[in-house]
Length: 152
Image (cartoon, rainbow, N blue to C red; front, top):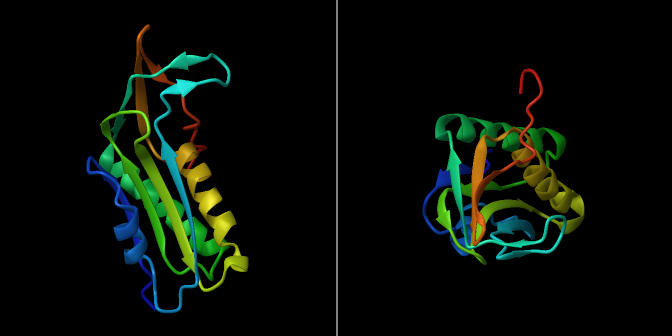
């Protein structure tokens, strides 16, 4: 069976309904969706205001790594039906979705929540996407969790 898998870097607005429709089968009864957003105010750690973020990616490698994330999800959770891994790049303002990880399955108790959580955690670890934070006090590149291990 050819299961739907989407992985892409885009400058376009994320259309949740369209992405979900693309990874839903007639047997799908559950979808777990994670969407990361641009925060305008950060209270945790060094509290500050963000006017906007600028995301950049090395697209060929980023999309290859997103495919790897999807492959790892399928290996760990073989019952997952559809997978979407989508990252926006460009200039993004607060309250804007920046990343979407969605997994579908026949039932909610099949690991679909865990698979989506794994997807966002792995994306942060191995997909080369960088962000610059612009605020009233200036701009700075934000250190992420991107720390690929040898061979990743």
